[in-house]
Image (cartoon, rainbow, N blue to C red; front, side, top):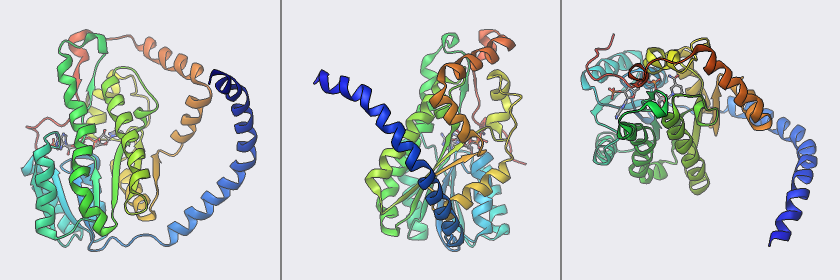
Length: 322
Ligand SMILES: NC(=O)c1ccc[n+]([C@@H]2O[C@H](COP(=O)([O-])OP(=O)(O)OC[C@H]3O[C@@H](n4cnc5c(N)ncnc54)[C@H](OP(=O)(O)O)[C@@H]3O)[C@@H](O)[C@H]2O)c1
């Protein structure tokens, strides 16, 4: 057995390198052509039933507006009902023929079952589930006093997506629908002070990559990996405490538009901003250099006291919407 591995350790990288050199140009051409064709034959969203978790603010809220402009029917889920109702009102004005709001917490499995059931009872079908709800807790891991606080990040970001998907699957299978996952570049480009958040996004992305293999061709999956977007999650404590304050933010409206365009093309992956895809290559091919660069950025700014360090950057439940 060991001999086989020793042989593969030498031969496999060399053979792979040669294959990459020949295949990459052909694959790039195929990708370009396929992108052009999918851009022409984009999905018509009019009348489609779209369920969005975390629709009361940020990316989820703007996805609701973007889908509304295309005439989709919407089920909007979040914990703050009053704020959701305001979003629903605006979505109707923008062109959605029917919008329902469902107060629910994605970290509770019974809530996930209920919001899928209520959507089906109201609309009779489901074409698209958007797993968007998410929070982050910022701070050095060693400074965390109550490590159990961090389970909420996993419960919302990872289990919230998994549980909602579990209950939506039979309906999405019937409609040959789509799952959209709002992931983060933090899932593969790790930065300090958001260790559990990054882990939750890596787990989420890995789960849905596996599910894609199991569900094809009945259900399509679009995994969105985002850089920093100008929302409450990123603008509050997140960017300063993670030393990412010099990183350009994507506008939340522009980001929602790109996501909906990508879904209409039936893309399997979307990375926004697009240049982050090149960072992925740097991380894969030059990991030592990337680690040193990230440590330098972190060391240069210093750290604050442990009390200031830990901060949940999910929406506080008492804030009102504009
Ligand atoms: N902003 C960024 O830079 C960025 C970058 C990469 C990825 N992302 C991802 O994008 C997604 C949306 O983030 P955002 O930036 O739009 O954040 P946001 O502005 O803070 O909005 C988060 C949304 O999630 C909802 N939510 C939080 N916990 C929930 C729960 N337990 N149950 C149901 N809904 C819940 C919130 O509504 P309620 O408080 O009313 O429940 C809110 O609608 C997240 O998954 C995040 O990880 C964001």
